[in-house]
Length: 394
Ligand SMILES: [Zn+2]
Picture (cartoon, rainbow, N blue to C red):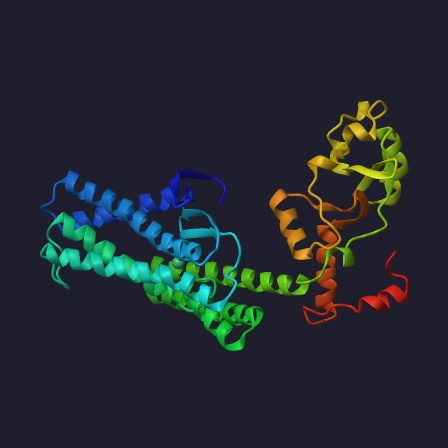
């Protein structure tokens, strides 16, 4: 969610608008304008388009209120919320970490649908005050706007309560199974599996409708199903990775046979003697036994080839103070998050200023694959002392 426009902050939460939102807003305004013109032939053109645009903007405000209620409840329960971004398919709140307990998860998740439901019925009640009666097409522009907002918000609340993870209803379901089973990972797996079933039903129903002649509506259903399927699968994979690496320190996974190179060496020598011979991706640069930086093929590639003879490793390396480092006790999961948020593939593992090893993303992924090929339970940890007896650790 990077390319978005900042709108301001509410309660310390940055509000952003992703560019994809404009496409959906234009679609809503356009189709509503067409609808208003057809059912109210007595409205002027200005009236039609003002009502349509106003509805699209107010729809955005109600979506924001839905997201804000998630975020404000999260804040009230001690979670930090960084930002809310609205995009084509709704909104996302960036909450710094997952809910620590089932109760928090429940209230944060249900706050959004409750807000949408209250807004929805509020709009319908206001429309009734403007003289609108259910099952009759609203006469005035104000009532038409309110009726549309009312129905869409009630619809939003109902759709979000579908019990498929990662929809709000899926989170509510997860919090309830969490409270019953007392097992956060297991409840995520259950909610994600139900999410996949729900998504499959959407796709099936969409295709069924499409061939039954519903055309675009059927395809739209199938598209939502496909989106939900993808999101449920991602949450399932995430919990597998998290379970595998929970309580696993970096020291058990990092490679210790890290090649150390001299900082005064020329790049040409480094490429010929180390890079091309060992096939390693990452080299530690030391000065008098202390780590001063790292050098990878990517860093060498930034220097023009004809300068390799005159450039030293120290000039091309990334110095230690510009690197993100971890200690041997850092959890693998936290290290992976650090790599992802800084877009790096390796992290030096440092204790007391000396290099203990290198953790690379590909290594962690290979380990995960080995576990799944052996069909080991995700949380299986090899007994450390046995590894030590065989001299695996150095
Ligand atoms: Zn929500």
